[in-house]
Amino acid sequence: MLTVGSRIIGQAIDVDFLGQGVVKHEEYVIFVKSMLLSEVAEIEITSLKKRFAEAKIVSLIERSQKRKEIDVILESCDLLHMDDEEQLVWQKKITQETIKKIAGLDLSVGDTLSDHRFVHYRNKSVFHVLNEPVLALGLYALNNQSLVKTEDFILSDPLANRIVSTLHQAHIKIEEHSICHLAIRTNEKHQALVTIVSYMKTFRGLNHIVSVLKKMPEIIGITCNIKKDERHILSQESYLLYGEPTIFLSLGSWVYPVSDQSFFQINIPVIQMAYDLIKDHIKPKAKVIDAYSGVGSIGYYLLDQVSQMTFIEANPDAIKMALDIKYKHELTQVTILEGKVEEFIQETEGDVLIVDPPRFGLASELTKIIIDKAYEQIFYVSCDIKTLSRDLSLLNDRYEVKKVIPLRMFPQTTSLETLVIMELKK
Image (tube, rainbow, N blue to C red; front, side):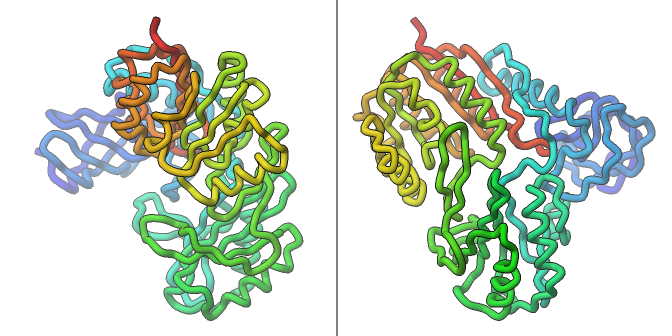
């Protein structure tokens, strides 16, 4: 009989959506962190429920040829042990299986879209401050309980890693419980906007941090963001400490001013591939509603294909950035509405809908409106395959899914992005 601490020999018959190997033993299904398909290992039970258990690898007996010989120590790289190309196959499989399980739709899923750049792809990285008297930055370990000092993060832009390393070398003494995070945004010009996330506007060590960063010519701006809520990294309260409050990022022919609070895609080459797919499939001269539009990265990218574009966005910082672009280019065909999508969409005219919602997907009220409105096309960009599947099950009676394309936005992680193209059923 299994108990916590029991050790058994098991073989993985599958890899789940969290990148865990699935082992069957007696009446239990056991999920094993970092175990790959067909691997045989001695595993130790770490958690036990009525019908399933969790376990860790004690030793590998038979290794998969798809395993990379890399130690996985960070929670943010929870799929680093899997071969890069195999990750594309895994994402396609998980996408198809999840949609079938939750939505009951047996859909054909396209190959995972990727630029095959698997490391150093992030243009934004957030490092956490360790509880030490001298500034030390790190990331969460694989158990998500402790922080590991880090300055050569495999996913970050090399400039971001160099900034962290420079701060470590400066041995900056800081006030206890003052600074909590350091966010670094970089662009294709090798420039950086650095944000110090703190509980207070001033604290011991702040001037030293700023003086060290100012010596790096690549850093065009430094801001301080005041931590308001432990559930969120950033609040809407920021102060400029040096240089410029925004950094400019290019997507296609468009240049976007991005502040420390703005949401912007962190893997631009892959999201541009997705936007090109939308461009290829969107009906000509459409009247488009871009819901959850952010700074307008999707809508502006499609602007030469459409007759009218309406942005709906609740974040005031993103609205400001979108308005700056509209006025700079005198875009009379663009309308920008500030508020929740549910508040505006009923009265907003459009025959094509683009939705790029947060992780919880579409609100039930919004889903009902979308069904009633009968858009000719819907382009759904999702960052959560489970809520996407739920929404597809609700929209299925009214709309036909034409394409499902997994997007490999976050290599080395189990985060799944997906583009779904739908059309109104005749």
